[in-house]
Image 1 (cartoon, rainbow, N blue to C red):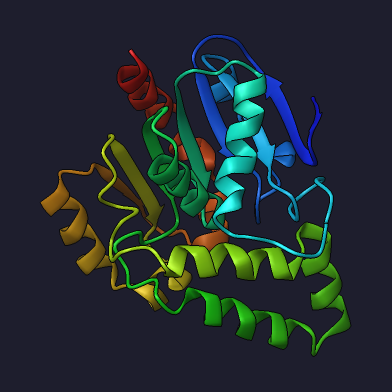
Image 2 (cartoon, rainbow, N blue to C red):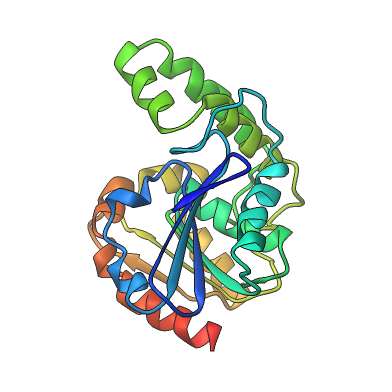
Length: 232
């Protein structure tokens, strides 16, 4: 555990590396033993997120370089990425920006959706959260809202479906009742998009967006098996 040039990171486990971005999900509070028991799991929080500093000004495309710099220092030459929700998008964004990524496991987000409006969506969410002191306090404790805007602006500027068409294997999963995912892309359309691309996916019955995050134990063992195959 440490900090490199303003980027917080931690490492647990041994063997081949799986990088888990810490953005909106604090992975320090979630049981990742299904991964750490088989891989070297490196959690990295770019500036503005989690325990990393909040410099107040951000370049979304720089976030990939921030994470890559930590991996350079740790002498990681090849790695898979894992994430859920916004962190899942970052897992795919790393693969888009760093040729060392060998596989991506992204849950709870429709990467084939039209992401061109995500920056404006983040701005609206920030404006809504400001109307409630508790909501705003919860938001800024997790990350700098301006860092989130910079991240989503960067994603919005990518070519359509760029994060689903990356040149490495990908796996997806989401909860059957995930209304947040459905607000961006109909689940049946997402399933069809993934099938057309040959991307395996799991839909877990009865769980919404937060519920799926709470029950990652339902998918982590099979994801670990899949990552093992890809990293082999």
